[in-house]
Length: 293
Image (cartoon, rainbow, N blue to C red; front, side):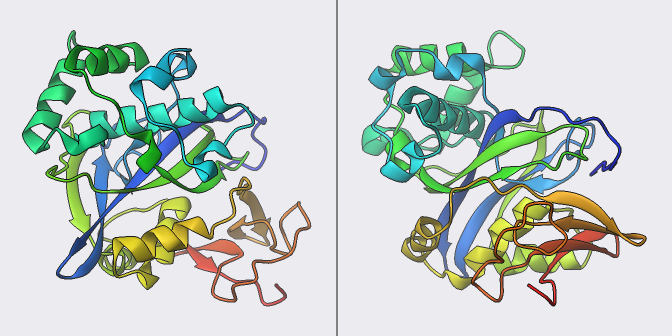
């Protein structure tokens, strides 16, 4: 699913956005996940959070009338307010497309309404875009509640990967009355699970998770409630996390900023439990901390 080549010519990453939707359940905090179609061009078959590329229309003027003001941390994802809003628009558009979830002012839609909105946005057939999303909101008199998107962090695909993305991650408490379900097009299944359950399935080889997904799940193992998850999100650094693919002998490693083998000589994370690299073990990249970090 990952296609690394250290000799591959460098490509410019495309802007993208993804949303980690959380809710409280008897088992504790749960995350909403979707499984990408096996034939997807990037991370086919992987379990991910809903998200995708930023559409040019996501950053066009006029969105301020269809959205609520961004939180300060979400504004920090870009130097220009309109660009930052565009990332949030892309995040919610993709969330509606892939998960039938959409936070709106007043929580005036439920799960059935969200499904109907997704179906309407998908007509005529084809990949919905920002224009269709904006038209949908105007027709229904809805205001997308972008203020509920809490900036988590930002990951950039390594230069050694064929397809690269500069992805802004958001955390979103599940909107009241909604359910969440995959689209059976880009995604083939969806489910809610605790961080511990997700990591257990991953370690047992039942599901495939990309390194940024693994790390995003790991940090929420310390949360039992939505409020605790929001607090964790608020403490994360918003500087781009740029993993670098290297070979340590024959061992493939994805190094993170702060690892001794990473080309950027930065300080290692202060948290001793935070990994500085992902090492290939049993066909998956597992987070480890370098001994000298």
